[in-house]
Image (cartoon, rainbow, N blue to C red; front, side, top):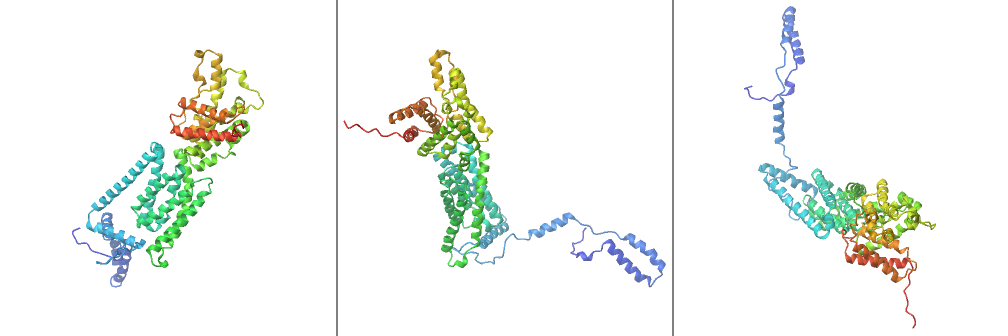
Length: 539
């Protein structure tokens, strides 16, 4: 134990078997000089004395390994003292970037001070915090509807954090694959759930955060900024799912064009181009196609609508809509007219016209269970309400809301479509049956709640416009001789009564919006009924 350590080769040591063979060899030489009897007595004594006297010490072995590892430098390559690693204004290539990062790690290791890392992390934390705060202020100022909705906020933050995290993993693994990261998925996803302006702002925030951790930050941010704008432009009018393939192709062309321009500015020769980056751009564009399943997954998780799902739901060949057209054809035609009115109005006042149209197509699916109790389906002239009390008639009419919600949930319709079914009558009354009941009975004996829809009231522009469109379209069918004045009075009276009953108090719709909706409805109904201008007489 007290002796100094000595270095020996493994071949210097004998195993018990090797030592036994050596003993036999020596005894054979001795047997030639001495009698055989003495050798036979000596051999078993020597073999029994052979035991291991060198043992493995795991602690010392691990200590030796750690000492060897400690002498290994994490740096890459070699930089001679006084040698210039990179000159001011030089292009930072991938190889030079690795050398610089390696030199920084080695410098910090030799310095034996970890405070610079803490300083860097603190600075990064401050910059990231400022970026998120600015994003929050933007939402609070310009998109209060998003700012007040926790699901929407979480969706935005998850998208940003995921892309920043993915890029950081790629950068740590190999900076060569930086341009393979599909950063443009972010503006595509956000545009699908929100509007163009918010998609662009979130994309800018994301690439700025990523820019803190990548080399050639200006080149990266500029490249991704232009590609993000192009991807948003390509999805402004989303009408087909195939558009995402067009978007992917445009992203690749944008990457290639911008990178070529930057390379020509920074290099004197085409031979210096990093042509492998074009392959990475193509891979990034292909990976952007994963935006479609990502959007589908986020729809299910957050229960929010996108144009992709609305396009599928608004197809009139959908089973639920086909059942409605077969069982209640009058209601189906009414729903189509309401969808046209609602879509035109939402385009005028700002909102999601595809959402309004889709919600209008499904708002009356609850009428399928008892279609003949609704006037638009009474083609034979027989009215079953004539044989039952007014309260019972009102109950049947009101029940189409509950039936519609049940059918929607059974068919797996998303909640944002079911909301149109629940809110399109708000908390109004079944006016005709309530008026007839008051006319034929003492008002004090009538329970108004039995004639009142359960609600809730509309809570956004789309559901509010649907309530207006539904009532106006239904009432317009009872007009015997529609002209300009009668249509104007009809629209004004119906919508003014809804405002008086405070049906739009929960929605973000203004009196200016309501005035614009009235104007659209009047013009559209005049076109439907082919109302001509009344010319003055010659006298």
